[in-house]
Length: 342
Image (tube, rainbow, N blue to C red; front, side, top):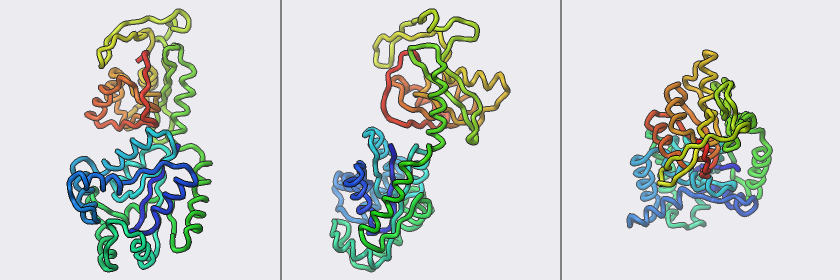
């Protein structure tokens, strides 16, 4: 599953690329523009370019520079399909999405006069302007030192792929098609690579209540690994069965936990300690949100980024701990998995 963000100048053809990816490639479409229009209407404001700029800047200032696109990204992930997020406009949005797995930023541009003719023909609620106003609107959004505000120049400069839409729709579609072929057949990203290693490590786990694995990485180098298993020299669950303990989860339900094993994250951190390997600034890859105990160990040993395949159904407390400690927590999927061995 991949997510494509689209940025570009006014009337350059962002919607044309969206149409091609949706109709021809089956992508699901999410739009910053549509998100803002919904908020503008909720506030009872006129739907125009000024309102979009003001409301977008206000939401980013109140929450974070990347807040809008992160809401859309969460929706995209929950769909489980290839997705597009249209109208990436700020440096904060670009930087936030850069850290997401399988994300690519497309930028599209064309001659200003050609673009103005297109927006006149399009005739949407934000396009009823003369040519001078069109240029002024664009210039206002091209550069800003405020990460909350539009900076199309930055977004375009930092795109993974750029398209010139000075020709026909077919020519633009051909450009996108060629890039898409390369993306869909591309080798795995670093996050995918290390997550696959963590999944391979999990095959050594010795408790069938949850065979999870973990790897810790720094500067794209594997430092240590760990998997679920009993302390060294003690019998494993696969050999003698589980050692259960009852507890009450966050929703008040009684659950049973196997307490015989050491979690994968704990084993990996122990391996680092035994070998004198410092973990400051490292990234940890694991199956799902670490438990509270693992989260506290991760924080104390200096790990600054945790990447999980999925969310743990009882992981809210750990998520809060990571947020307070400034540890970046990311998920490949927003799916919630129930797992009784944590």
